[in-house]
Length: 240
Image 1 (spheres, rainbow, N blue to C red):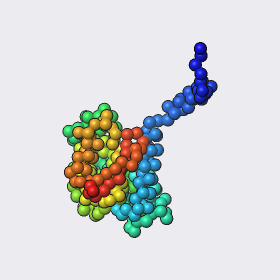
Image 2 (cartoon, rainbow, N blue to C red):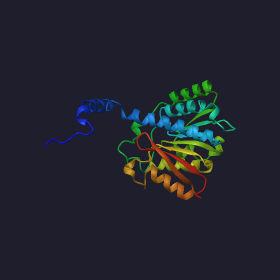
Image 3 (cartoon, rainbow, N blue to C red):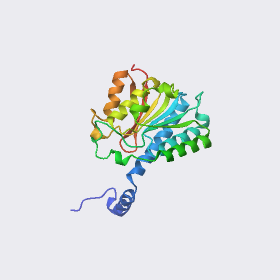
Image 4 (spheres, one colour):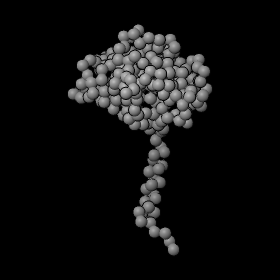
């Protein structure tokens, strides 16, 4: 006796196959970047309506596309932005890969050769953003062990939104330590590799994050995931 098909799935198999083929035409990078851009917009909106003062810090700028999108998203807030002061934009990257790192070979994709980009292009992009949108936008070139020694050097007092795209444990931990004194209740952290490295802690970006939270009593809650393997996290200055 033939099985019943109460949902009529047999009739729509053709359309399901078409949808499957179309979805697989979409590059994975596009999937991730669309989710990331949406997350950046949400981060600026949430910190804006809750009047979370401070600057935008991005660690791992690469081509500068996320940095540029962040500026545009912030400027589109308009009446929703309840902050008293303006947001400045700081981007940190070596633009030469990871440099010397004990865990540089821990992941098959996160290798130097995939993350080298001409810094001149990004500087030109940042300069245009600052001019067109009336914001302060700074790109700081150099390996993190050189550029992330002291936030006071850049006159940064608070962070409202932090975008962390450091790929590896060492760079992530160094960037997080740089941010420790800048965290306040409501700071939003966007972490690009939160669920990568097979979900393991230890010498991974996620491991660096949970160790940093424990060391400095930083409270945190994951708002939601975005893109592929990434998370929006809201931070509190101290665990209650």
